[in-house]
Amino acid sequence: MATKKISKKTLQKNEHFMDMQTISGLSIIAHNLPNVSSNMTFAEMLFQQAHIDKLIKLPVWLFPAVCCRRSQGALSSTEKQRYICAFNSINADGTLGQLVTMHQGMYMQHTNLYLLPWHRIFLLLFEKALHRYHPDVCIPYWDWTDPDQQDFPSWLDEVLPTVNTAGGAITVIRSPSSSTNLESIVSSVPSAMSQTDYNNFSSIINGVHGSVHIWVGGTMSSPHTSPADPVFWLHHANLDRLWWQWYNSAQGNHQNPAITGALAPWAYTEPDTRDIASLGYNYE
Image 1: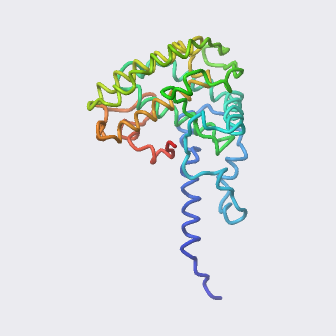
Image 2: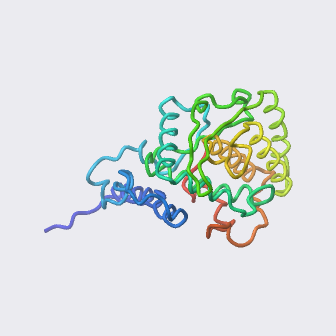
Image 3: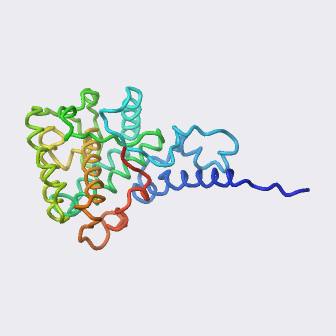
């Protein structure tokens, strides 16, 4: 029997699928959220099925090789609803409650150099959890520097979940302030982006970060409760995006914070956070 020659195109296709398996987040979730629901989802079943790409044609939109985080202002109504659905799904299975409890820990993740790298990993865990239900859903970012987005995202107005955490149930409430006040808060972002030292950049961004939390109000006003609000993740995705932009700019010049050791409570270290492509996502 003649040996069938495997084409370069087929190899590339298989390599692409292996890349998808790698970034699927199954191992990331298992190692960092050990108490996540053990009930396997259909997305996980597909990822674990050997050579599934040879059996069926997997739609590219459903299993993107790289998660592209887009502005919430550019999302279609379907994309908004799929984010809300995925969010509600990880709330229902207890994953969101674990993340909120994790954020309550004293890991030096606020008001210092740890803010951005620590939350980059935190966002990654959340996004991988979303992928258990909707592999196509990436965290949108709320670009509050855009004058057209200097209001609370209206499509989240009625999304007020109750999240069960180790410390008890949290029912999301909020009372956003005025657009004028938000515009004032974020007016210092250009100054941050012009800094040529990470410490100075981080210091300004820390101030903007906390001020937007307070601007939203209610649940977002406290680090013990804020991740229960779905807008928390959009807010932090924008901070992460600004950091990535600055890092790759002439001003940032690929500077990294002077942080040693693990980013508790995980085994991740600061160098693990430097390249978002290696973490499986990018920004549009």
